Length: 211
Image 1: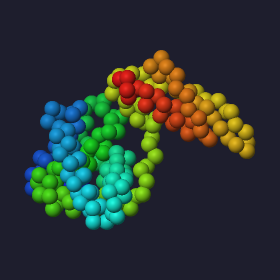
Image 2: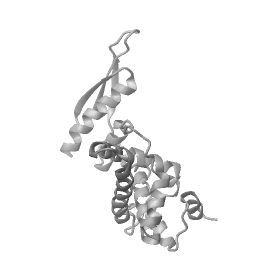
Image 3: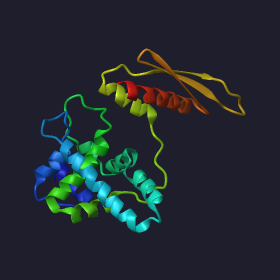
Image 4: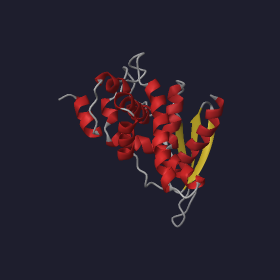
């Protein structure tokens, strides 16, 4: 039994066309024939199935919009992908080891592959069995990871962080500085980790506009 057999067992679907499954796990760094088109297609199928379910459950448009955003955000989809161990089966190019966006993208590509192989009903069954519709709030954004991904995408050196303790034992507080692109971005928080995340958030907001 190979790794794709194991994946079919985990997702509860047997492909008639195994090439679709393999393509859904192939990144652009590995081949010109990759999962990018499937990802785009799968994103639409995911939105449709999630919206369809929430339409019958939500009281109004606001609730439906919020719950849908939580259900299909990158952080939520990444959690699903990790539970399915998609990261371990991805076909990557040499040196492609930190592409975290590839993990949620693989889930969306897999949805499209199931749709093309078995139709909407099978894709719907897969989505409904994997998406967490009970989550009420979007997972906290990991700004340091997102900043790192952005910088790696543009071949820019990673940030250097420093911090200083400005609090008291009764009220801990830290200021962190992120040095990146010849600029300094400052954050504050009750811990070093929180302060660095806040500094990374400031850097990310600025650099996303500039790069």
